[in-house]
Length: 141
Length: 143
Image 1 (spheres, chains in turn yellow, cyan):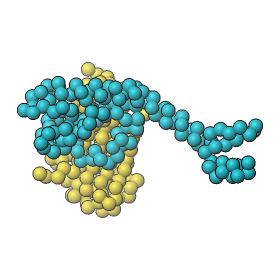
Image 2 (tube, chains in turn yellow, green; image 1 turned 30 degrees about the horizontal axis):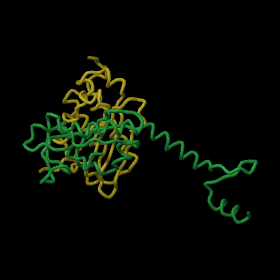
Image 3 (cartoon, one colour; image 1 turned 90 degrees about the horizontal axis):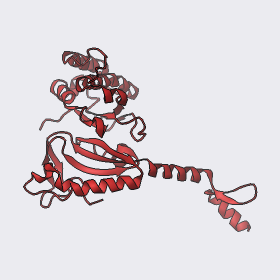
Image 4 (cartoon, one colour; image 1 turned 180 degrees about the horizontal axis):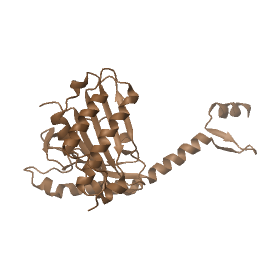
């Protein structure tokens, strides 16, 4: 089985679980982008979309890089209030945007031999093609 | 007397107030409050398959892996520390989604978890199997 470069999961309060679908983004990334094309500095990206009630303090944003395995691990919160009121297509756009902007957070690790800027450009192109970056308007149900 | 003072000084978990009455050291008291708060702030969660595929099975009778479909329950659990505190890196690569199903005290969450583990046997996703499981694939025990 082909190794997937991007492992996307979700961590959600049950009331919004059904509205958050990571598969379209995971499929788009794994089907179109190979990390190895941007250098040998990153082998894999684990990304968790978090959407829990604001009162829940157990799950906070985290960005880590394991130098040995060259894997990035990101767990980032979507705005719960927006997720709660938005429809699925809008939430998908929020997720795509969150993934895209999170690439800037990699900078802190000063990863050697990985063209992060070029990678971000390609992800942006891909997401734009999918129309996931159109308008930040949060359509409700 | 001197000996006991030296003993207390060496064990900084005890302090004395201005009247010489022993009390818990600040750091111990802080730790106690944090741990008591943790017990009040628990959550019961379900881990579900993030994609169709093979997953480890601890409750299967004669196999160690089971084919699961997207969204099917792999495990129920309870934590006071969240996903990272509970699993650290061990979930990496298993492609499991984490659903917070109930929030409450540790005791309430453990009760909820137990109810869910036992009721799992009756879920349609389990009943459709040739050999239904007694509990979710990821739960080694009933608790």
